[in-house]
Amino acid sequence: MRNQTIKTEFVDQNIHKRHDMRQRRFLPSIRVLLAFDAVVRHRSVTAAAQELSLTQSTVSRLVQTLEEQLGRELFSRQRKRLIPNAAALTYQKEIGRALDLIQHASTSVVVNPQGGSLSLAVLPTFATRWLGPRLGRFLQSHPGVALNMSTRIQRVDFSTEPFDAAIYFGTQDWSGLDHLKLFDERVTACASPAFLAQNPVRQPDDLQGLPLLHLQSRPTVWSDWFHAQGADVPKGGGMLMDQFSMVIQAAISGLGIALLPDYLAQVEITEGRLAPVLHQGVAVRGAYWLVWPPEKSNDAALLALRHWLDLNR
Image 1: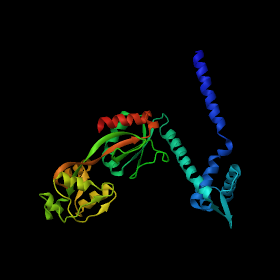
Image 2: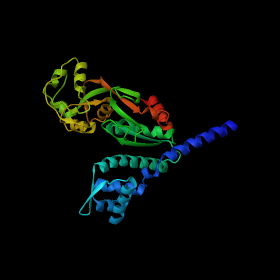
Image 3: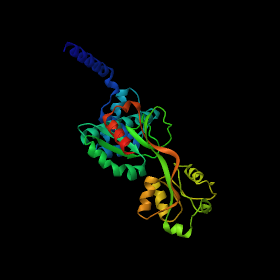
Image 4: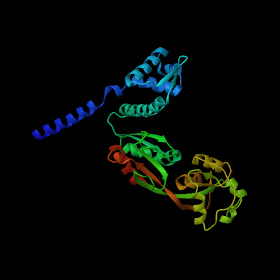
């Protein structure tokens, strides 16, 4: 008992030391920071006041309070307008991130007061066509976890964005992040039945001159596919798109031949909207990965998701 008391007192002392290090001068109130953030974003006191449901004079007074607290000017005054200087723009960028983190943490407490909140960034089509249909089973087996998802095409910067983990397609090239490989990419070439009726494809050479539909995030996938078919990539044009949903719709509309991951292709083939071209399920470069910062490795909600994905990949 005595050892436990000593340990508790030591922890409490450390907490007080951290609090003592937080100088109140550098911790403006949320009300002040919200006013400052709104003025910089809108470049207008009037618009900021409308957003915050405050009077213009109140917003101006809050901004002045911040300048007095920090001991430096953040705006120049021109005909009753507040023009943010370079320091204000830099400060607002950081303050905006901090306000997002506070809002995210507060929302998590309201939505899931028992804890276990997880924020996940995921590719749009992967979220709707692979992860989404399976999430019910995960949430049913982990009722204490609140999962918040946002779609991202580009990679997440975990140092500036409030995500705990992300699911991406690519190679194992994330410096400083932990990872779990979900599955390798296998693709099937597909086109609408009407398109293939007019343009029969019985061998790779039959694709010469036919429009191929390309995805921005998969620049090498057609090359990999033709190599697996034992053929060279044909010369020819085709549309370039940034999401699989657009590629699928273009193929259904008869605009060309799409190269789709099997988890997408098989749905469209089964429902008759698209038909396969030559060999199906061709292995290509790239895989789907779950990645997260090392400091999140022992997070209970993330551990639950990792275990579930490991069993269901």
